[in-house]
Length: 503
Image 1 (cartoon, rainbow, N blue to C red):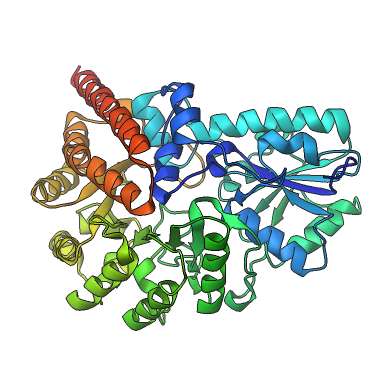
Image 2 (cartoon, rainbow, N blue to C red):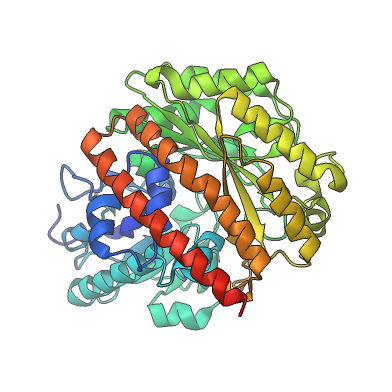
């Protein structure tokens, strides 16, 4: 610790720096609103990480990438430090010139966040925790580094980039958008030299080969295997970004760093896990199997998790290849419910096509989309996965027939081992989206039918995954009890919203 402080201090709110053992831990915590008592959040869902010193033992992957880019460009560890909010006072001092903050939800405008707040009320915790962090940062800057610049980055930077008034009201001098490993060193050197920079600074991505390996463990053991998507759906912020695949050597190095730092389970993340290593949209299952086989050779690695996948890629895997992937993800943990999120968006192929989703269908005609998705979700179930299908309620142009088709689709899956999460449409330009009061009784029937599946399978999946990750029985029981309480709460909320929609 330097009593004079560090020139560059990087941090993030607690939702991004808690001691999560699983990817789903972070998803669960980040989906809570302030209607959930703070004591439950702080003691159960977002436990503090025990650091060996003032430096953060875990940090969001984005901060780890920027840290690695700076160190690779000649900055030293005496100049750059990542800390959590409890150690800001150990890092901010007279020598501090830049405080860089990563956030996923600075304004709570993401689709999942706006859905949770519309249904449950309150503010989403990532936004609330972000505000709490800002208050602490400003206190330390005012006390020790009044000339320091405050900079925002991370996946939520878009929420302020087009809103200069809000940027100013929150106290940010600059917002950096997008991936920035390509020009991070240039930006921070300019800030240290007090050069003039625009309020909004576009980040410059690097090539896949140029993505630097992380130098410390990432929150939830997250390991990036590809970035971008490129499918062009009009309702997704990442849709215009072409997909690139991180080299296997970098992925393995990042995974090793996490395991060596105490993260016994990792999460390999991509906008389409089954497309890793693909040539365009043509999947290469053997590349994915090779990567997972190499990861399985890491001593001490327990569960390998993943998040997003597209039907178009799943369709290119044989049943045997899907089972092989499932077995490699689970390893020796005996996990029964490895999950993967599959973006269905709507069972109406015509509605999806009208919202830019034709590439997502990859050769499937709109009129076959419903049956096509049902077939491949059932294939995932048969291979041993627990699919988490996602739907977008209220897409532009949605009609009653589209809702009925999606409702029939959901009802046809009631006997399957599957979960379905509907989110309310929110435009990517930050303008207001669908509100709970705008939903019809048919919408609420669809949402309740989805959650009937979720309430059945999520508790089983969570218990199973926590067991595989080595979470102690006592903590598992406590979280299951909390989950039962939330089931009661959400059923009551659905009943109230449904009643109000009929008035």
